[in-house]
Length: 130
Image (cartoon, rainbow, N blue to C red; front, side, top):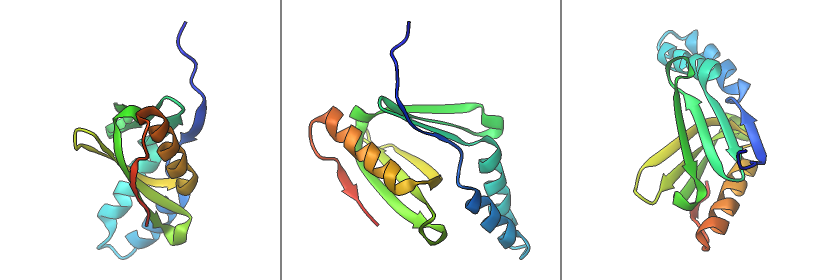
């Protein structure tokens, strides 16, 4: 029997990111951005629980990254799409970074991650708010 995890957020990137990048694709110059947004919409999934952050992505969703809150050293957020979605960058204690793009409800998810990381490390997380 596994340990129970309470899921705070589970889903993909914000649909506005895809719509915005498809509109940019009509300029031809922004086609790479459009293809990136399409790949994110198809295969990128986030799962934020009380124990970890899991990201499934890559080509056809074959890559998975899990981090636990006790490894978090810093968190940053950047609003996108007029503040309807945003990016979150989590820096780990070993210096590596985990980037989460086009997150819906990014402010609430940011606060949740910061709270859980502070609980696990026993100290406030060095966070930078945009």
